[in-house]
Image 1 (tube, rainbow, N blue to C red):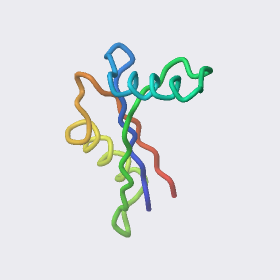
Image 2 (cartoon, one colour; image 1 turned 135 degrees about the vertical axis):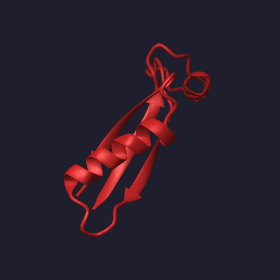
Image 3 (tube, one colour; image 1 turned 90 degrees about the horizontal axis):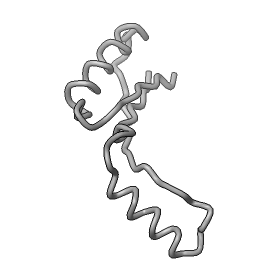
Length: 81
């Protein structure tokens, strides 16, 4: 089973990296781009025999406690197969 954990800045937190990307895109002539929010994702392969329920619980714990900073970031767990 494979999963993906998406981590991004909370909407209320400034994203200077996203702003820099937006400015660069505008400078390259992409004037339709109004804003960019930058994030990261983790592709995770789970051990054989892991149930979807186990995977969901464990991945949510890992995403909350290790992969993201709960003060400034949100996360989303996606089980791919």
